[in-house]
Length: 409
Image 1 (cartoon, rainbow, N blue to C red):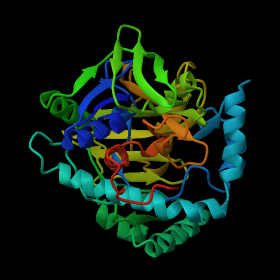
Image 2: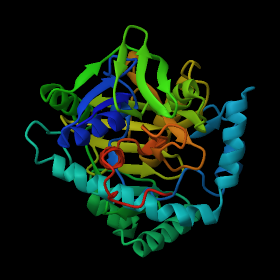
Image 3: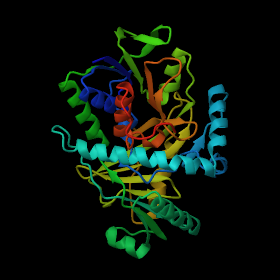
Image 4: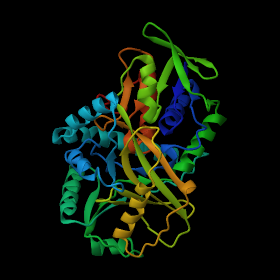
């Protein structure tokens, strides 16, 4: 079997290592951080086949311009002089069509369902206890416009073979009896599940280390050692590593790393924020999305609840904006008038950059320029949701096996 170098220790890199390990490969993971934080930890924890509409969707560009002046809005693009941002923006706008939604739905559904099955299999492996639950997900709406959108989503879900139904406010009271809700109704996506991502990451790192995977933290890739169309090795700030295959899974930094190989990956960082509270009076039974506000709520293990949201397209070096966090909590109050949730201390606020591709679909596959390089990035808000499936697909690509799904899209 081969030596495989995986650049990036988020959920995509770890799952790639897990499935490559099953095939007997020797694996080295390199990450520029200590791997104790990042998007794989701070996300909403959803495994969501319901998310078959890509970020590049009709209306998002127009809505984005409306939100530009609102510092608490759920979607924001920071204007700046950047050639890569401009190129990404042009591709994003061109992709935001109904045709693109139709062609993206099937591959997004397929990779989501594959990932869901693999996570459920993982629950049966000794050493993994990440509080996986199949409770579905509720998408709350307040307006007539979003109620109509919910009807469309239910029909589209059923056409894709996914379980979804429209619920009235009265029906919602039966599912969430402890909540005072200011809503018209909800879509219930029974096909979805959720987990505690922090525990999954810790379990996965421990499993890989215990099974011989070498994990090199606080090492940043500085260059690549190439010979023709082959990558021979990787140079970091402190060492060199050699292998037969390289996997690039560095999330929002993938475009930056790829440029060291003279490759272009249309990519921007979409910053999100989350807050996790312990033992507060506000309780929910199911994961909930607040449709108009684009805010996610998740009941998590150990009596925790997590609130997350915003998509802030900005430089990876831009300081966090606390008004975004205020916007999340204010949105919760609009949907749940009795919710009295205090603003947390700054060190309790998580934020991280999601890797956003130009068309809303992840980049998974080999490159034309280097035949032993596999790209696995660009999952936007779906990194955790699609992590297991992406790792499985990476292992199949490297082993030259038939893929578990059509990865051409």
